[in-house]
Length: 150
Image 1 (cartoon, helix red, strand yellow):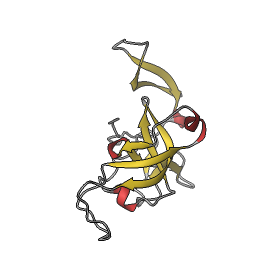
Image 2 (cartoon, rainbow, N blue to C red):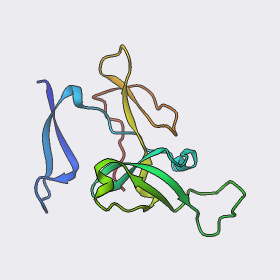
Image 3 (cartoon, rainbow, N blue to C red):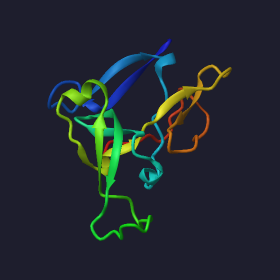
């Protein structure tokens, strides 16, 4: 077999059903789920950089516009003990046209993970994001703990 039966945890076979959607996917299209983002990844993400927003049961590409300060933060001191509660984002592409929220809870955001194949190593790659150091090379078929939706 040149494919794997994949079950999509975020999607039901049909509306209201407990049965999850299953689909045959070619091996070369499989990759592990992105790693969990560090809880402070937004501190390393600059305005204008990409993030992903969990909205309407899917991850959407977005641009971070600004972090919205927590109440009680000491402005001008440059450091926070914890990440901000909310951020302003702008969705990219077609999602920007469908009325997505602009002010979101930071727990709905993750780095703009991108799967990059390792040159010369067929089927191996790594997850990279502009604000995070590479997390290591893994085989495209290996599970990796994944990121559950918020």
